[in-house]
Image (cartoon, rainbow, N blue to C red; front, side, top):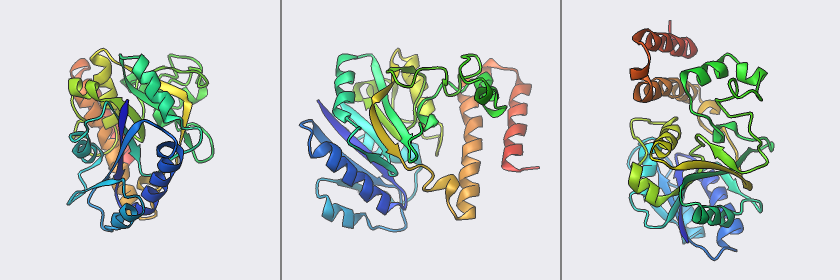
Length: 287
């Protein structure tokens, strides 16, 4: 087996250093699996990744001239991958002694119809990052989430589909989708379905990819025997810069319409799309 780890960076050099250090300590230093680590710098203003390269000479760094977004930025590296597996990682993720990437790879080896695996992706406080344990965001699933029916009735499948909250988090099982923050993917499956869809600048590109894998006959697996920490909200929606917060929030809601248009627009009457647009404008504060 062999694997390439891809970390996407945008103005987070300190986080990248911590992520790479954790990968070295809890995988590279002890695993016999051939592993390549690529850091894609998505047009950061601070070109300080060269200092990280000096500390970790095994890194391959790709510098882009501008921020291409999550999908396009990762695709630059994905086009270069020659290994059997590739793992996408956010810069704010951290390997630990409980990560056991070798176990994930062994599972993939013995289950050839699994295209994507996610570890149990924990937030800094130890709770599950529910973005990594997703159901297909159908209009009904989305409605139950935004009306908080899922939160009120999480163990009833018809209401808990958005995050599949009714499933046993202690056991390995199939899910519809996971987060691109920590996503292990079979390269041959990528060759079948294609790269991340670059129309999604940020958000939903992972959901879309998982849907395409499922439609091609592959499975998505949640694997709690492996744990990765996600120090979420280090940028984006929790950024102290108000302009960054507004721009990130706008991307989040605009992506909902993009995803609907790609996968559901032809399945529902036109007035339903008008309702979605009104909802998105309401959430964005647009009158």
